[in-house]
Length: 345
Image (tube, rainbow, N blue to C red):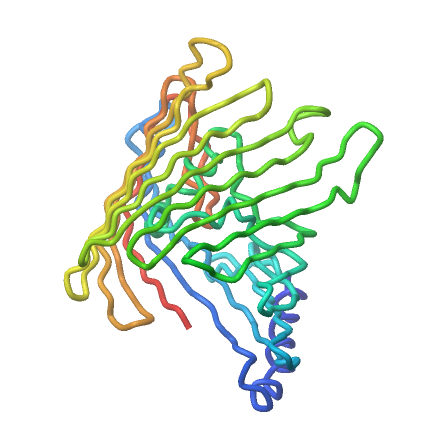
């Protein structure tokens, strides 16, 4: 791990001359930390015990830039690394979106590691911070064991130019370990209309042979939202499937309202019981309330409360903190109260 941190430092030192020579190379990042009061849901093992913990939430550092190749064509690149100031052992190099590609009138074509179009489709729904972020847990399927919250390795990723307020995205990742019986290639596509006030988008992803040979993991997602003055509304629906094993429907609603430097947020999401089989009792609900206060354009402090409600056979937990969640007993209802700070640079 020390070698990885040293590599980041060396890269920064080597990049300094590039920053001086080429203003199109940018150092950027985010540090977001919180102090949580975590209750795992009053299980028999820890009934009445609330754990206090320092958490990091998707902090990152990156280098990105472009080179003008002439004729409207540009080379683009990005190297982005997760950093966890509270636990350096969890820091890895270039484990977030990292790629090289070309950009022009045809759109943007990238090769490397990148979020899939299915995961990217989240405008006005993915509004909560810290562990209150529900998109990863519910809409994209982690809580249901059908995770399509994918930052894909070995990816070819295409984004179209915006035309008539519509943007199309597509990605493909081959199976580099293909065998005679399995070919775990991954395909993801989306289309979204967004005119700044109103948006609606549809996405689909297929992960072939992910469940077993001949059994795919796949999902369909619909998102929409609109802005009305200082208030923004968002909604999402997804149908997620581990073929012949599990299928769930999810719904989510989100709203935010800005009053000067203060932003009030609320979100609710639910994942149905498994539609394959009977009496599964594994449905999940999640909700959160949050208040943000902007100290500047780049720095904000916030407080939030969030809870997951598990049916008798469900054991969903939070996914966004550096603790990686805690073991949740089936039927338990974990909850978190936290205060945090987010700084972008």
